[in-house]
Length: 258
Ligand SMILES: Nc1ncnc2c1ncn2[C@@H]1O[C@H](COP(=O)(O)OP(=O)(O)OP(=O)(O)O)[C@@H](O)[C@H]1O
Ligand SMILES: [Mg+2]
Image (cartoon, rainbow, N blue to C red; front, side):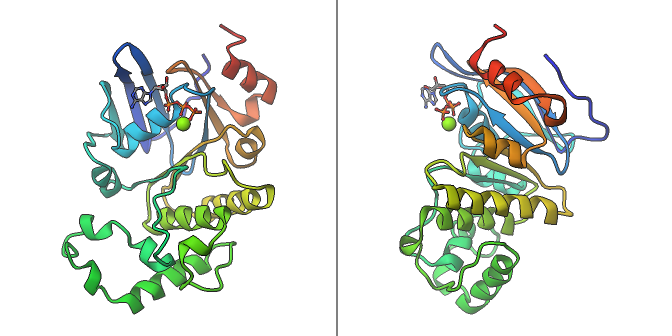
């Protein structure tokens, strides 16, 4: 297996991460590290363990074994709130947006549970300043939302995905996990989402890194610089895009090298 060597303290390092469900090895002894500003595509067939890996990093699934380090410090996440507190933001295919709320309310959703001092005060929050901050964040994005008061239920799938991703970026995550951000989107909508991810990456003078799951090779190729390939729970390849080809990647996914 190829493994690019990277200098400096990694933003993320995982060692021997496994998740077993009975006899199913959803994730099996996976190790890799991720540097700042890296945009990594996580690829693999259905059931390869991609979502399980993301969920372990997001605190939504407790690994059976293995360790997670952020900037060299070991972290154990028992809940998604704990992972978020460490700057890990996740966008799932099934979006955690609330249809009957507007964009600003969705930006702040769940934060009342996690931020000190906000507990139980959501209903009393200053809606005007929330909206002002949400608007400032949204204005940095290539996607246009003419009306921040628009309810999520009135938006297209692509617009919703853009709201969810910008929400994750808004909170200044160090590590953004996107599980199939373009699945179920039309060509135009997917392009808008990819454009936004690209803009976030190039605008980020921060430490932000991203792991993007997608079955669409064109989408992965357009935004990622490195590819991790899972097969039956195991990491079978860790490749720099500049040093590989789509054919090689597909061969790893389908197990042609087995
Ligand atoms: N909660 C669970 N209970 C039992 N088995 C599970 C559970 N979650 C995932 N699995 C199994 O773990 C394996 C990996 O699943 P995972 O969802 O991580 O795959 P994936 O790579 O995201 O696939 P897809 O591309 O279809 O989304 C599969 O065999 C799946 O059936
Ligand atoms: Mg999945």
